[in-house]
Image (tube, rainbow, N blue to C red):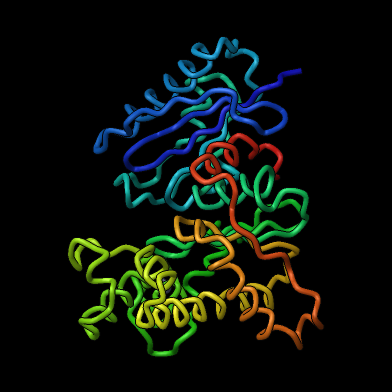
Amino acid sequence: MSKYTIGIDLGGTTMTAGIVNENYEIVGKLTWATRLPRPAEDLEKALADLCRTVARDNKVDFADIKYVGIGTPGSVNFTTGFVGFNTNFGYYDWNLGPDLEALLGCKVYVENDANAAAYGEYIAGGAKGYNDAVVITLGTGIGSGIILGGKILRGFNFAAGEMGHNVIVKDGIQCTCGRRGCWERYASASALTRETKAAMQADKNTIMWSMTQDIDHVNAKLAFDAAAKGDETARKVIDSWIEYVGVGIANVINTFEPEVICIGGGVSNQGEVLLAPVRAYAENETRNITTGKFPVICACQLHNDAGVIGAAALGSSI
Ligand SMILES: [Zn+2]
């Protein structure tokens, strides 16, 4: 009985393959540049080469690999391993799963990268040990992965679980998806950065001006750092942003009533400074629906390894 699987986190800049053991621990990993643009067949050969190399480097016989799992951007048909559309890579109709199976001679599972990372948190991170979990990543947008009864919620055409594109403000800020007022326009890390810049423009006395090189270097951490030093303008930015995070988390609770909600992305490094007020806001909003029994709201734990571990566990997600 094979002890190992391989998980691949395929991104536009780098691709990382990890050998993962039965306890969902990475025993060895290897990162190569993705080197886009390149033809799909060429990238598939590189992925196969990456898998064989990481196995060899870690003295694992490739014949002992149970299967390979890949998390990739794009709309992925998990059943066929077919990637319908991948804007980042410029591929249409990419037959990734079957092609890589032919190259490697083993089973290959393909999943959307956000779902794979959420599944990693579910199987070995912040949501480990729960049946129903929602993983929310606050980044450039808001990524989400929903796992109910141990299964990833995929939708009939594999586009389910886009919590970031639920409208929370009708006729609100224009979103990349075409709608206006999506949650991610207000509660992503980018939204926090945008509001921090706006608050600085409006207040030349905030200490945030002395804490950054210039307005172009403002990031999502600045307002947290300034608020911790007692800056009122930063405090207001944070309080307002956290309420928007809380609105969406309350929607998650009212929709799925998961046992646990894990929050990830760089901003989750703020820990309880972020989580405690989000929890308080969301609990207050959902009290009458949940009758006071709230999900656990915690930070993601696996950070950059979530994608590799989740991909390596995809065989259990069916
Ligand atoms: Zn949207």
